[in-house]
Image 1 (cartoon, rainbow, N blue to C red):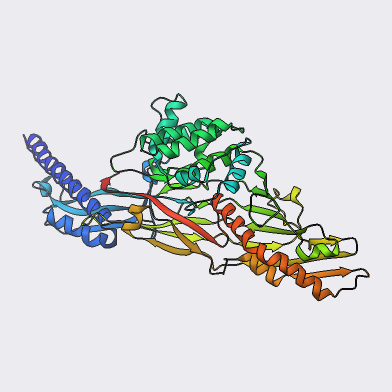
Image 2 (cartoon, rainbow, N blue to C red):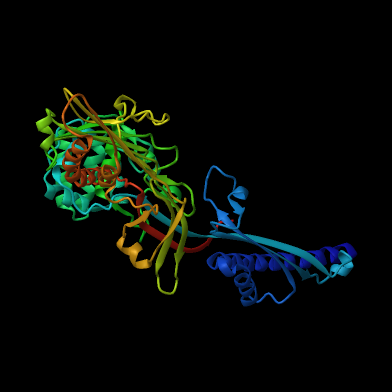
Length: 530
């Protein structure tokens, strides 16, 4: 009889412990959700939730804030890491005592310790990209670049380019169209991005997505490029786009729009497809004021895990432009130098740019107003610009610094003029740029400068170039030859500045600066994850 009573008493206490443990778990869940929703005041928010849910007994609260990564390759226990920066989650552990009704008789104690834990995370992700701020461009330079990238003759009008430069495309609509075109059924966006796809198929999907979004004029232009013919290798677009935590989805969630520049996406796909990474563009006499212009373009391999566009809740990955080298060789009419037997004047300009970089610094979502803001840390593209000769065959070797020698400006039977000048672009490292809610909504492009004066670099180089004039028996002074050279080069310098600005803009890079924008921000309420 005594054993039966003891068993009944133990069962009553065990049931009470179970009920109190369930109640405490619910309170821990509520505390974790409140803390994750208000990470700046996580401790106070968690304690307020505990009080609001009616836990009247004394308790001990252990609270950690940090980063939760929904990475299926990690065990559940390793997905949360306590850290002071890039936080999106809170882990709560509550310890308290619950009374025992018959504990003195059965266990020799009146209370027992119960402990419950919960982890909650909120989604604060931003899509951001490094792109081009070009509002318009002349057809000649752009056609030469696209012809080089496609391996075919591309002939678009200025109106065509302006339609393309002004068009944005829904990234998820594009990936959906690419999935259908590639015959992939019910697979995630990440699977699409990992699939080897040829450039014509990529551009076809881009045109389809533009049509779906009402960008028919831009879609027509993209199809013109495809019809011209595209050579190159099939490549995975994952080198260009990193969807981060939303890559595992197979469709966009409500309110999850990411819109990107149609031109930047097309150019990036063509660059991936172009295996040589070195182009020679013959602009001929298309540039007013220049008799002939040839451009050599060499872009470096993208760094691993360094896309053009990323979706992330934190400072990783870092997005980058490619390392770029340009050698622009222009031929000018000799002007007064023709009297000395000079047939043409040369002005070779070498541009070497390091990667521009950007990483996400912060994402904020105001639950009261619905405003979404973001901040990026940006490092502009640095390097140098020279008037010099370089070995064009070595342009593609970005691991080796090129030897720069004095440029051959003019020559005749008894005359030789060489010159050299250089401007180094330095910077102070990362710069913070904040995007307001309106700028996020409008996908405003913001330009971050290195702090150096970068406008009119060729003009500055010509003005400060050290000339070396060699005269053999001619009855003319060195200063007179120098003046004649200046009369030829000075008006041509601003024209070359324009050529280089157009080329770098079309390549998505800029001398001494970086163009960045927020392509989308996703905010969601905190949810339990463990």
